[in-house]
Amino acid sequence: MARRRTSIGALRFATLQRQSRTPVWLSIGWRVVCVLVLIGIAVGVHWLDRDGLRDNYDGAVSFIDVIYFTMISITTTGYGDIAPVTDRARLFDALIVTPIRIFVVLIFIGTAYDFVFKRTWDKWRMKHLQKTLSDHIVVCGFGISGSEAVDELIARGTDAGRIVVVDPSASALERAKAKGCAVIEADATRDTSLTDVRIASASAVIVSAGRDDTSILIVLTVRHLAEHVPISVVVRAEDNEILARQAGATTVINPVSFAGLLLAGSCHGVHIADYLSDLASTDGRVRLSERAVTAGEVGRPLSAIETGQAVRLYRHGAPFGFWEPESRALQAGDVIIEIVPGDGMA
Image (tube, rainbow, N blue to C red; front, side):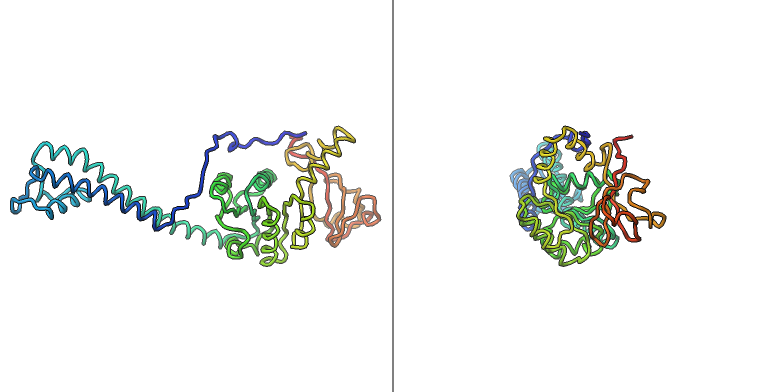
């Protein structure tokens, strides 16, 4: 059996991650409280040690003067009208007030980045991506199957930039972004989520939500918004295969059934499972390829195909084997399935 590729990401240490559940207002609130606490500490110490300060205007240091001096010291370098004159006051300003100033500035910069610049930038990038999305592949669900599908697409020559991953998990989307895919953190069962990724202009949709009911609901939503886009879906219960097709799926894949086919095939020949795995993978010695019949092949039999070993013919959506009469003369618009050398031959 052909060995699967080992991705660079698989060699990295995995860390536990969880999407933040803190509301925006609470996130801003605790930052404001943190700033007020730091300022309060500085004001308190300056007030207790007010004898170490000198007011060059009237000579008296009031509580208002302390607040003024603290705020000016934290936000700027001061104006010089009030200044520390004792060694203790100067050390406090140098060792305590200066770090507080740095922390306050970092908190303000971080807040501005998180809630202003980053969100504005993300919205602009989303609009730009939406305008340019066309003939792309949408992957709904980036679990094990979805991740493997993306790896295989990239290995088969699909540009990672043409793949859009829709998943509610931020950690899953980080893995997808590392592969070069466009991502959106959203629920693929919602019309708005799929509209955001321009599902109507997609070339194909892959659905692997991890649950059959969710996957079938996604198929229904996709078919509702895009009548003709091909949809491939993974279901694990045999009873749900019919439901998935009725929902509008073009291709229904049951990994449990496929594993059973491999196991049963291995009982009748030790090399059958190996060959089937080669066909399903792009890095095996052989692989399956689907293409339209060329003008020069029209009228010729399926067995005369020279680009590979032709095994099946599709005419008007109906399949025909290489032994059937329909395969004796190819017609314009036919689609052939052929076995060609895989990347493993290199």
